[in-house]
Image 1 (cartoon, one colour):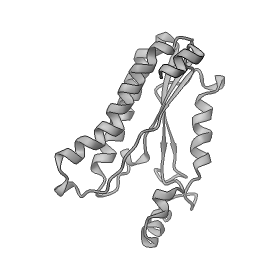
Image 2 (cartoon, rainbow, N blue to C red; image 1 turned 60 degrees about the vertical axis):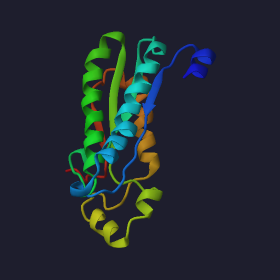
Image 3 (cartoon, rainbow, N blue to C red; image 1 turned 135 degrees about the vertical axis):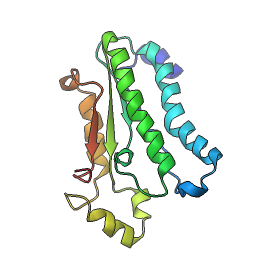
Image 4 (cartoon, rainbow, N blue to C red; image 1 turned 90 degrees about the vertical axis):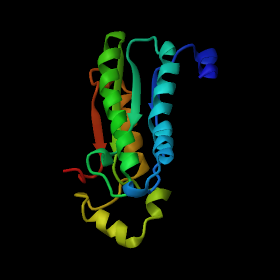
Length: 173
């Protein structure tokens, strides 16, 4: 943050993309594990956003938070992850209201199942079950998420704030 401030003097867009998703059954989850997920997935976003706000001086600054469609369509054994990412959505909407008068928009993107190393590690039976629930019939590509993030960085999106854009191939329909 200091380097960006020294080099550029301002920040036009901040993308908060922190996330950790351990698979832990709710009934046996230890509070320390729950706290660690919230520290990474929520507290880090709050701290980074607060640290960057002084540099987001220009009107039309953008803050974009990455959450997940699991907030409304969770998977068993991921209660801590779903809850933490739901917190990001609440924070996104509240910050959007607070920061709009300063010319700063705050939005979120919510990827579903994206073709990454994490989804590659899923057993074939799990992949088949997930794919059967995706209207488009395939996992998304990382570029699908990147394109949504890039959209929010464009002037064409300057009147959009407090929104969550799902990138899940229709899984949440």
